[in-house]
Image (cartoon, rainbow, N blue to C red; front, side):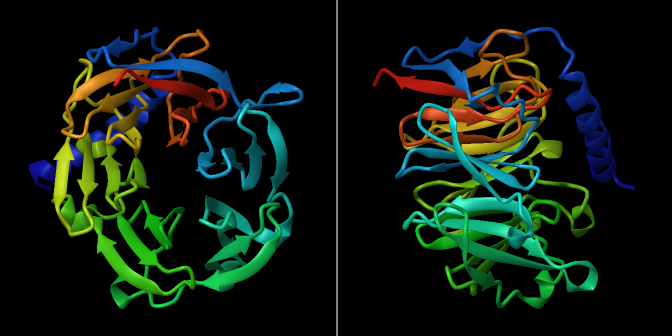
Length: 326
């Protein structure tokens, strides 16, 4: 085994250890080096009994209708602009084993799910109405031979295109709304990895911004990458305990001002970088304060500058307001 391969193996072990340790470490203070940005805690997503004690999950935003969707244990709950649950779906068998969801420009809910069992197991997209009632099953067509092991576990909808992501094998397929593959992308060579790294190195997070740039993190490489539609790759990040350095990175998202937000599981923070990858601020941190975070996982940003963070330890989904002075 070469030095590079050994380094990745050790990094994988380190991630597993430090993620567990992060749940018990002492509190960390928020840091800001940019006076024009601030993030204030607002509330946690709730129902009529109180805060919902989610432990992880996926959070998605319907920007046009200002509604929040949380997928947890194959059930989807929908929340209004005040963070209160208004309805749920997916807890019946008609949607299969739900892995992710997205909302298209017409307000339909696209559900990425697995239907069937054993050798008959198939990954499909089900288009649902706003109540989660199935309208149409969309088969994924045209997967190339070199993507035969493609098993997407997450999905992003952007401007009429659906991005299917296999985070374990570092592959992305872009399909149209009819399920036809239009483009495939292999993230292994773009990340300067080797073929033998496939399956060992996994994505920490993935998103697509308003300009069609794909953003993703690789925890074992302590890196975040922006991949433009024309194939240009820009990577930033380095390990360290100082503000702006990466611990164990998870999800990544860009706001409508071009700033990049990265969740860090080890530090239990969300770090903020400008469009030039210059560190701006970090917020959250371990502790028992309302705005503290415990091993943040996924993030989402609404059109109203609210940022949603899923986390572990039954701490639920925290919502922050992002403030920009200019």
